[in-house]
Length: 194
Image (cartoon, rainbow, N blue to C red; front, side):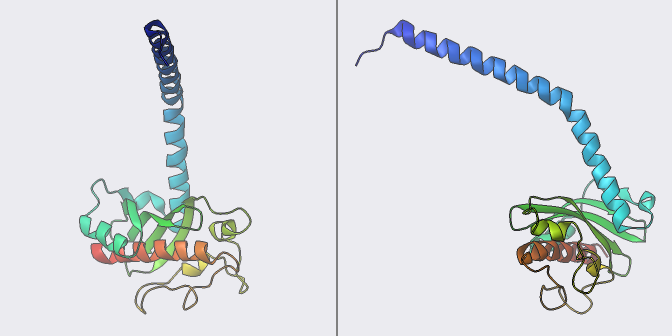
């Protein structure tokens, strides 16, 4: 089968024009939405910080996270993406861990004694009605919220483990393990910073 060179040039030219127009439209949409999305993400981070520490205004963002803290979090399966120093009162960390349907991004507060002050989920892809029970801090049979159970916990008595010293929501064990992984990672990072 033989193709006419004019046909090939015409198809290539049409595809090039379509690609250029699409790229221009996507670039324009990005330029319009970049700042509002950044503002929403910054507000979500501030709200999450307020949920895990009593006074988030004393916490300052750490621009260059020490490698030993990153490595300590990674040793527990979490990724430390942001660090806020409480000037001697502790730390707030944004940690990412694997859940049942993808990553769970959470803020974890750790006080100067190495105990969790709070956990707040910033973003997740957990299954609605199952994993969202965990990320939404629904109550356990004891009445305590699944995220609230971490308050006051530390590595003083060993690692946090679902089924041992952490309760899971029935049917959402993988999501509960993801949160527990993130909390263990944050505690390890705080220990590395001490």
